[in-house]
Length: 117
Ligand SMILES: [Zn+2]
Image (cartoon, rainbow, N blue to C red; front, side, top):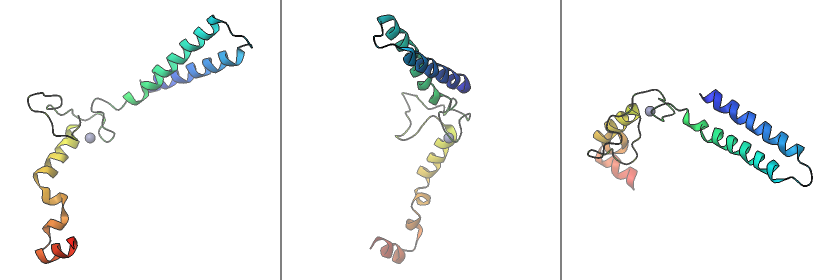
């Protein structure tokens, strides 16, 4: 699918370039409409290039599981959570054990004072 979009983009841009190069000094309305049509095809193809990350939309786990709570209006995910279940599980574990996220908090109090000073 991504390859098809890329080929479509390249074909549309080549066609648009050919059309623009062939224009004479006074292009008519039909020339302009044809060029706009091809450039719109290029825009559509370019806009769908980023949509090839799989159902999760995650760069690390594009074909992983989607979090079943994603989009749940009754139990919304916390801010910063995405569709990827693997990444959300990692965030949940970090939220459940905040000490892992703040290594200085595990240090003895005298060291913590030193780090915060
Ligand atoms: Zn992920």
